[in-house]
View 1: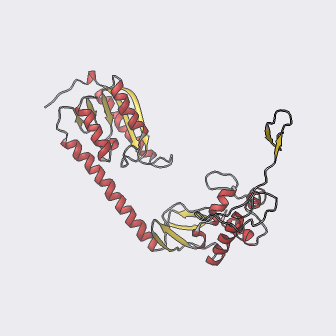
View 2: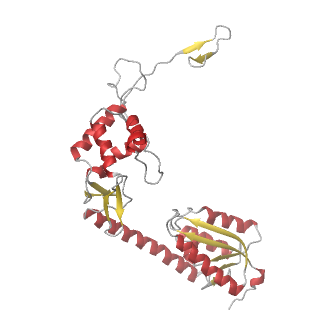
View 3: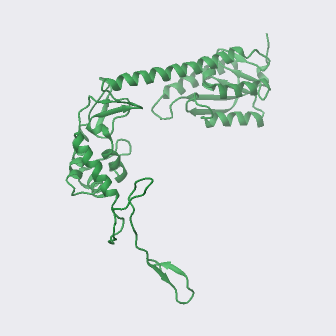
Length: 316
């Protein structure tokens, strides 16, 4: 059995959680640190640097700290990796294969976990099997999630974060009305259908009258946010995930005919000229490739009689 002198090993600590959002898998990092600290107290390791990722290891070349760690191992005197489990290092065969190659060519000397260790002279088959099992687990998990999402959509459920005006109910796993925002968002639809308000006027209305704010930003809805609301088929009852579509079980805010009218109004507003000047054929000509409306713009130039330099009329 190969032995190693831990006194000569300078470790870097690698931690990883799969979700980048701060409110997801926080306990995962805390548990990793707790386990490794207990293990470190027993073994009295020398830890010189810590690398932490919040990204999936199933996708190759997806982790900044992991890439930085491997690059640092080549250039520095750090010669060991301490991690909770081998699946923290890799769940894909590209990153895993490169890591094993670096270990075999003695770029560093040791991969250590609380349960196992791997040396350059060891048989790499157990480590390859562990990483392949982690890779297969990710593939199976992805298939199971897609299958469950498909079934949920077919049953009229929703798989994502509910849009503004609604909220996700954790108890029933359904989408319900947001009592603070539902009526206000519904008013936006009715205001726009009345053709008395533009998107910019609705944005100002959200700030001054309705006091309608975003879910995460806690700021009044911007013009682009309102446009996203008006183009979201969820509000007339349609739910979808990938290629799967179905009529949802959530309460509708508008009907399908109203949604179609709003799409036509948005198209018409998109064809209006951005200038106050009147030009012939504005709104009638369209691009042959993308179908966008062709408009016109008035340009005024000022030419200096002395140096002949041209400037805009606003800054002569």
